[in-house]
Image (tube, rainbow, N blue to C red; front, side, top):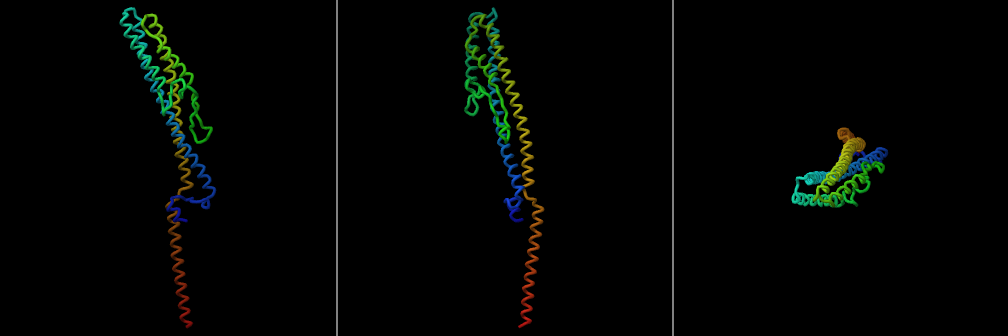
Length: 253
């Protein structure tokens, strides 16, 4: 038994060694394994949100530039040719807004579009038990962003009146993009705390499993040495006993 334990590194190698301990250790091992998967889930979810937030960051930069163009075009000092040049850039930027909105993806799935991941409530599995989930619903904020982006992409700034209207529209877009970015950041921060807590629980659970399953090498080595010494002593005594029997037989001859 000692040799088996020392060779495997486990105190419990079958249910016969410690039936109750094996059951407890198996349950702890299952929990630890589930939490390891949950940690990967949280990291994957964080990456998803960071991808969406990065896209929104670029959209924010574009919207700010579009607002600057609209502000410049709204001024009476801008000539018709000036407004035409500004309008050309404004419309190209609007197209890129739509492109980012429609084509930003994560793992092959669209994120920000009408049928994207963020268009519906999301549920992340953040624990080993079925009830340990995290629900995130950013669909309303995503809809506001899409509405403001669509409005920006479909208009121009060829006249002062249009440009003035676009200043207001760009402010709305900036607010909606900023609100969605803020919500994504808050959820990502929560996931980071979830991951840290899972790491703490997983470490301690593995330690508890080890205390039950792992062999104490020093103690088991001492047990094996003691057993070997007793076996050697018994063997020596048997040999001596056999020798004495031979001596008795020789005297009788």
